Image (tube, rainbow over all chains, first blue to last red; front, side, top):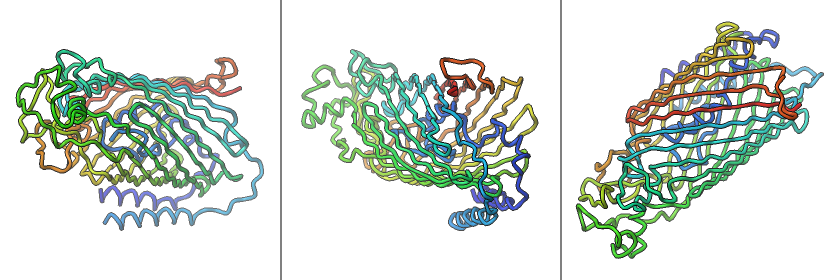
Length: 69
Length: 438
């Protein structure tokens, strides 16, 4: 856990690097590059929330709304 | 160490904000959503296993679920979007049917009974609103939601803000949500009848069946839940960063606190220090699952997506989770979308999950009656799970196919198989169809 947190902090400190311009974002704007789960993935997330003890940290619903774990 | 790491994490976020360039005067303003979009979503899920929590950690976990949802996103103005999400699901479960297994002459945890708890329906409704600033660098959002099934209802609400800066290379989001839920508890039939008859065996199912094993069945430890509320409060923080022209990363942090009735009222527990009692093959409960009335959860996850070339993208996800019930878990996903033509993409995917057991979990006939908290729900046990599958996506950017005024934008099909190390297996098929209004 400690190594993971430190690694992520280092990555974010690298944001001082030069910004990618809008006209250079052809690859970044590809639909498969979107930084979120696919819409059709929500039902898999639902059963994982029921069948596993953990939830959250994926940009979506964090918990509550069901009697699940 | 955790506090220092969290403070450094916040520092890195605010150092990014310091790089924000002054916005130039807004000229042309693109609509945040050009036209109404409609998503039709559906799934079929089926599972089976041998550790039903309803029968104390041993029994069939056979279950099927069919779900359908419609999501409509409507532009209210150049800057605003209203989204309505309506869903319904219907499940049929051999496990939950055994809340009352005494509808048959030969009750057993390995077959479903014909009782009303065999199936249920869940209806959900969510409305969300978002508004963007003229320069599109700030987005506010708010949502409300409600859901209802026979023994559970939920009311949720929340809001958040998203800021983009650094030439939209960096995005920071902060949101908060609350879910105010209420149980309508259903208890195992033998415990319900025992209490209804004044803590004795002189009525209900006990008039129709003979108890074997320990004939002095006396679950005096069982009491009805007084507090039936379950409230969940969360704060979520996410930071997305474009690293290079082909690489971008996001990190998600949630802080979640739950209060109230956090156990499941119809999940049985059997004590090692009490001789077992049976009706036919079905062991009668000593008590129901008892868990603490508060739970603190801390998941942190990250997505890293890399554009390999014009044909392939690599999508990865990792999450670490920890809570104060003793559970820690790791989740890792990998997906590889491959464009096989201008319209079709196939994507194999794999997910690995591993968790430690809750402090309150023990298998069937292991807990002692002197313990304060206990569960034999294998969803809270230690296990690992492999999930693998594939997806196919069809996209038509010109929306040549039309249904009434709706142009077909894309179709997403997914199949996954899920294998848990305790014997639970599941399969899920999902279908999503997106239309745009023309």
